[in-house]
Image (cartoon, rainbow, N blue to C red; front, side, top):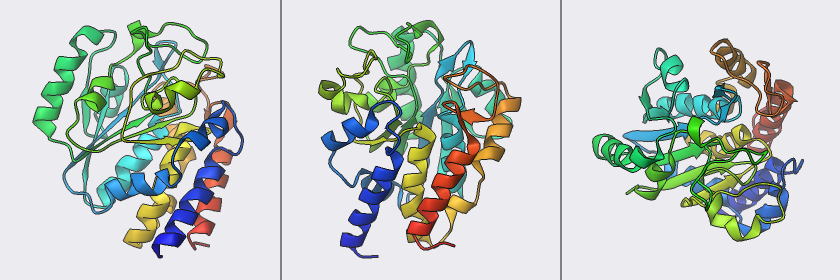
Amino acid sequence: MNIINEQSLSEKIENMLVERNLRGMKDIQPQLKSGYCLRAARVLQNIQGTVLIGTGFPVVNTFETDGPVGALVLYRALEILGATPVLVCGTPMANVFKHDYRTYGISIGKKDIGLAEAKRALSNFKPRAIISIECPGLAENGHYHNMRGEDISAQSACFDFFMDEANCPTIAIGDGGNEIGMGNVTDFLSPLDIIPAVTKCDELVVSDVSNWGVYGILAFLSTWSKHDLLNEFCPEQVLKYISKLGSVDGITRKNELTEDSLPASEGIALISRIRSLIGYP
């Protein structure tokens, strides 16, 4: 695939990721330089060593389904490609995932020690890349807020400092404006009915559901590696796995196999469309 075709493919996928415009990301997309899925994938191409993956948006004393699904799919894909992914999250996620995945737990509701935690982890892991998938981002007021504008600081883990202090490329995926990475487009978030996040990243990927942004990145990693990474893991199976661990839908707040109130079939259909674009049946 030549450079022109890669850019065109990235733009097609980027448009697919926001075509529903569920929370205004299609309106934000023009503020980003097109080709961001391609550029994010380039960061991970042939990557070796540790990749830190932050995820976990708190909802009613547990975590929502959007974020962890994409994080676990990306984790397994990076393992296949030879990297060493580590999930960075607060409780209860760190506790429930540690039996099956490499995890690094960070404090909940303690932003004041977040900087020290991040510096310690970065020194220990020396990551080659850091990725945030649907992590709450600090607002200008120094607090975390959900899509309803509620202050969720007491339930949130501070992954922001990992991005701020990184000596490696940083990627963030978000779908509503209140997640890490949205600081890249803060000036354009005022039309959205949210309290926007201000934490920035090197490459921001926007999508209607944050999990889906991962699939845009995996399209390129699949093409370059000649490994159909998008067909390795079924989102519905991942949803079943995290549901047993206590996840809830971020919108309905129910323990069900949905992502932002959408059935798993919607994400599966998107994957099928992306796979067709890159030549898989």
